Picture 1 (cartoon, helix red, strand yellow):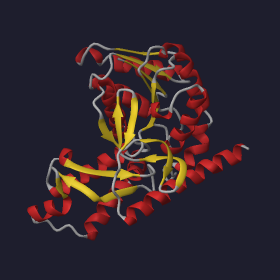
Picture 2 (cartoon, helix red, strand yellow):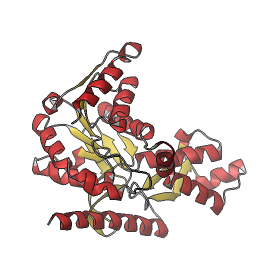
Picture 3 (cartoon, rainbow, N blue to C red):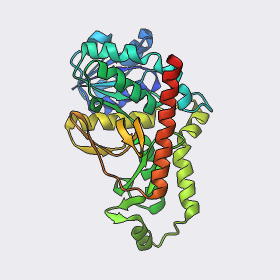
Picture 4 (spheres, helix red, strand yellow):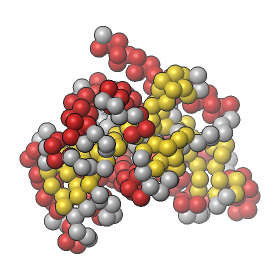
Length: 316
């Protein structure tokens, strides 16, 4: 399978390396405005190919994207220490239309995976642009809270003393400060969380929940403060999405896609559990939320919608 990656900074390059290491693609095209960087990154990854599996990794132009099943968009400025994801909007939205239009011109049937932050709003804008070229919103998928959900499950699994793969819980809403951890529907190996806690004889109080919530919500800020950027976790999330689409495995992932209405907020893009198929987004799960979670999701959706409105009002 052929995959194109636009934006070969830390996120794009990490995704390319992870794709090769996981054997998710046998052809990877790396496209970046900085062709010297793209050439170097592609060559470095290609030199690791003999240790893993046969794959062709090279830098190219938009024309070289032809025939790609998936286009990953990781282009844009990195998040600065102390900067919110929403503050990135105006810096990263400027380059989006050129990327989408040139990509569709050369590979009109591709599925787009958006990793550029703020991912909810960038995915929303990408969907609007793609629709002008006849590409449905189901083929424009943001990584959303896929990584946040993984962090949530990992921390829960560590505290509960169980493999995180058996922990089922979601982080929904904005990929950022207003995200909502859905505590009400967590299951462990098919058992409700409260029953599992009793079975293990664990002390699981509000302080524990608050600590896990804080660790999930502030993870990116702590990493950025320590080393300037995050790229391994999101690289893993991107590869998981690519695998699901490539294998048509119908996995449930908390990605973000443009949605008509979320808790009374019209035409907005935030994360919810979606069924992902080989053709893209296949449907949203009817997730049951309590009143507090519904209010949190509504607040999160309104934050994103307000920023979208603000962006368009500034553009006139």
